[in-house]
Amino acid sequence: NDGNDDDDDDDDDQKEGDEEEEEGDDVDDEVKEDDDEVTTKDGKERQRQQGDDGADDEINASDGDATARGQRRTGQAGSDTHESSSGSAAGNDAAGRQVQVGDLNAGVGGTQDNGALPEVAAGLKRIADEQASAESSAFTEDDGEGVTDGPLVIVEEESDPDFRIKFWRPQSNQRSEEMLDTIGKLGKDGQPTIFIGIASYRDSMCHETMERALHFAKYPDRLRFGVVEQNAPVDTPCFFTSKPCDEDPAQLLCKYRNHIRIHKVSARAARGPTFGRHRADSLYRGETFALQIDAHMYFVKDWDTDMLWQFQSTKNDYAVLSTYPTDFSRQTLDEKLGVSKVTSTPIICKTKFVGNLGMTKHEAAEEIQPPRGISTPILQVWWAAGISFSRGHRIVRVPYDGRLPMVFDGEETSMAYRMWTHGYDFYTFHHSLVFHPYSRKNKPPLFWENEKADRKARDRDRRRSETRLRSIYGLPTKSDFDHEELSRFGLGTRRDLTKFWKLFGVDYARRIAANNCEASRSGALHFALVPFLRADGRGIDYSKVDDKVNFKRAARRAQRGLGEYASLR
Image (cartoon, rainbow, N blue to C red; front, side):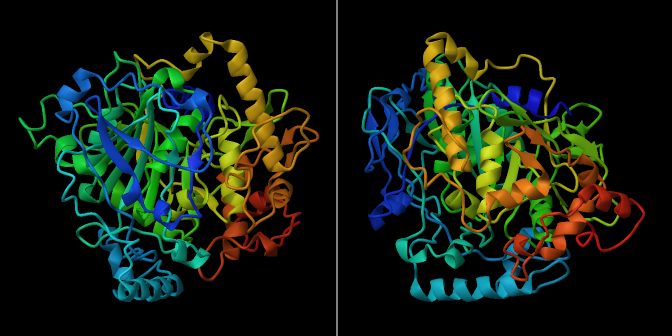
């Protein structure tokens, strides 16, 4: 596995730039996606989203890619569509190992089995009952009627100074921490849904990735896609079918087109990772789970049910399963059958300082066998953008910061710090379910091509963005940066970031980041910290973890089969 170096290069295919969000917290009506008005103009679908802050004109990009070819292929040119869906009360966060993951609603009034979280399930059921009795409109799934000409397409025009990014939020009376934990739109079958966020930069495999996700999912009807298409006019659109949908509606993208939301913006507007992923997060509509992937991925058969089971097995509602996916090749995955040929899993355990402003960049992922005694996802230190799976409330609490143009190194660390301080914990998968073609032929261009137009301006963007990150981390800054929405895209309050630095050996003054690979691969870190998981399943309680825990020593003890790791110094 080439890890971050090559993965980030591939991520460049879909790492984009910068934008802002509009929360509209002071106007309740703005928190429902029903209010996102879609109008038809010049034969294109576009969305005007009104907010209270001015946008940087530079990042309101031209579409440039809603080509006649793409519209003819999809058969959707000029259709005026509306989507009204806000989410449904989370059914079952606590389905057990023996409960078929496809029937996760068993956790709400159903049977609990091994691996279940009865306390969380009971709480979710109570809140779900309260919401049902109140007939809340904020947690109802659109059944697709009225959206007959999907996908829903948003076109971001460079010439439109009023365009705003707006994020989905529950109604104002449902934004308490407890209520946010219950977010989970149910589909027509009453089962939890999975939002799949994809940021695609001129990637011809974008439509293939969606097709493979649908084809190999056990329950494709429960998937919802939020795709950011950053194309040039010559590029293949993400919603590409071999025949128009009215000629062959059985094609997968046609069959599930009402489950696809696409935000189109010109490739020339790309400004680094957060540009596309910020917009992809804005396409979230309250689904139970959220999966972030690249636009060029391969899947195992029934990946969706396996992924849900792995999440449930952590017994941690604040778990985030994340890594750089295993390399796709004939030796690792049977592409036609969707059968994995490996039993290893990639783990992120080491990062390094780069650049003058002290950004950090992860080293390559290390493929390991799950440590003896661990049959669940494995706790790790870092989060990676290559694949990330969590409850949907992660996006509500910690959406991508859209004010970080040209940040590349530092993107993943900033998200890790923000999520961790909001209470989220990072795990790698117990076994690989999604694969990445690191050695892919005919790779698409990278967003760095946009530096050619004005390299000085892009360098200035990067320096200001990195300085913004230093400010968010509480580190000294010497130059100006974008101060807008620092609280919205800042650290959480559940944990202190300095606790992370002490535990996992990150020293910004000396530019040193500890190597946690031995403790990770042995399972010592997992065994040391998982016992402090809160009884209600809402994350690990780090207030009970000693700052001086010695994971290297714990790793050696773990390899000898000893028991109490967290107490070791």
